[in-house]
Length: 277
Image (tube, rainbow, N blue to C red; front, side, top):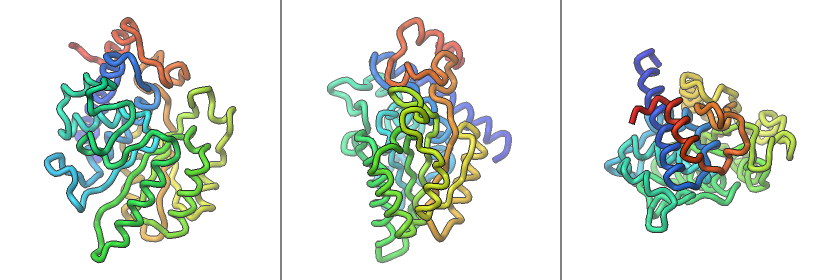
């Protein structure tokens, strides 16, 4: 990734953060912290790495993306808007009763959404099923499956059942990003039910494990490149992130797990993000 491409992706990430703050503020409801922590991951996937086509969201040879931590839907919607799957003006309808942009993604309502998620733990099982299904096709499929899970979500038993299944069946077409920000709704993941040593656990389940700075676009891209070279087992990328990244008073602040900013906080956040509107 050269400097020009890095600058372009960084600018997209900034815009995604502005969309997240604006739509959650407009809705007066939503989950800013875990949406902001995943911005660079989705920026890299949607604007550099994944085979997708806004003009044909259901094309058979597309890459799939599953947002297992479905409450972070604002970051997905922001990426879909910037990528051209949905109009940016639609973001202002987040969580309205008549909107296709509900608090958790719905694949039948929103172009570009591959899985309806929200019940924590289930999204990874969907991603495993997709990866297995693609491998079972008569002709080899170039499609790959990407999923984003949370560290709080990783306390769910279904995560481990899915991880065991993917490893056992050697689903090398599956790449999972773990948004490891160490905060869940009630506090520190490490204090409530520690999932460490997370890398060793996934390795024991026959996964290739990489650990990166989840806000470093070059490291994210490099981890995807390593995944594309993998032929023996599924890939886990432990992305160390900061909840609320990009907004000073939200960073590493559990209060903004599921709390919308008020008018004053919204103004401050947008100023920090350089939104001149």
